[in-house]
Image 1 (spheres, rainbow, N blue to C red):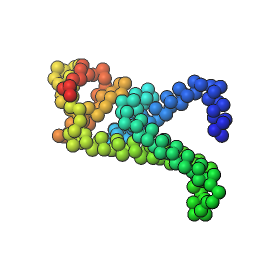
Image 2 (image 1 turned 90 degrees about the vertical axis):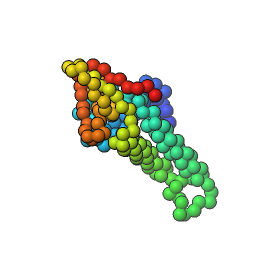
Image 3 (image 1 turned 30 degrees about the vertical axis):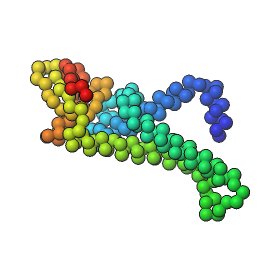
Image 4 (image 1 turned 90 degrees about the horizontal axis):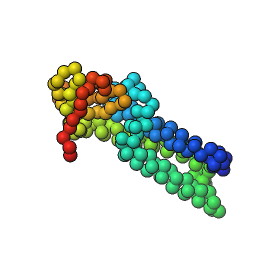
Length: 185
């Protein structure tokens, strides 16, 4: 199986770039959904597929979690291979050295990545609800008044703001916003 995959990737190297794009979009999509759903926002109503690619790159911790989970699974696969080559195997741990275990381990990686990203998004949402976030001053195009709120995020067409005192979420189209300013750290 691995040899077939290597052969296809040698013949079609552009698949690596396409695969990275799909993986990055999937990570960004899951992170955006996990984070914004904590505020009652269905991000799929407001985003395009390119927004999800950017979302995964805006939060480098999500990629750190992906690399951590993949590394742990890879190390476990190597350990399982070593165990399968042993001459004396315990009947209690015979399953550990099986190819089926290593195959199922790939699905465990996906579940582990999803769990870590969801936990990370949940923690970030909790901090924002407590008022620990980036406060921004938003000036709207139709009025000269500025509003202060917590910035939840943006897509290519919308800005998501949260008022922690009223616990209200506001979604504004980009074209209705004149400027967003904030105090530099």
